Length: 172
Image 1 (cartoon, one colour):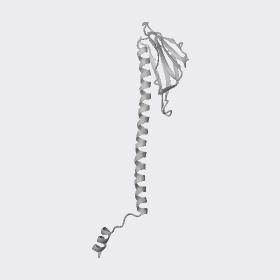
Image 2 (spheres, one colour):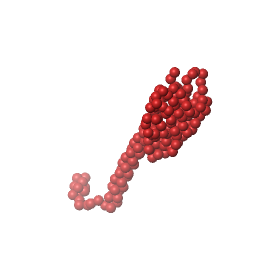
Image 3 (spheres, helix red, strand yellow):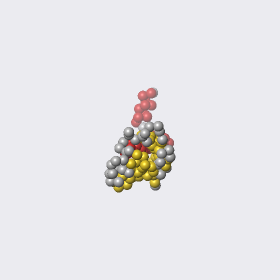
């Protein structure tokens, strides 16, 4: 009896019902939706990571430029001792091709002016400088120190931002 029912089921020419097709379609649609959401989340995370890396690289680039010029400078010309500026700071030194070197904050960017080179922006087009501050610190030693703070934000993804405060000291 069991074999007859099985044989009858196998040999039957019965096709899928409309309800079965709808169930299969719903299962496939649910699976595809999960796959698409997974890929979208992966691509979104990749974009956010790339944007964050670009912002941090730009932050490091600005830091390296300031360190490089501080390593060869002899005087902090502006701002005056024990004061601060949210617009610019200037370093002076012996080399007429490098100094005076002026960092200026305008139009959501930090610009570097060096006499032998055209003024250039230190921020990438995709990065916006939100704030900038340079404080000329007084200290007991004969050298000068400047504390530089700046805040960066991604133009493409404004939720990605970073702030840094760095202190630079002139060599003896």
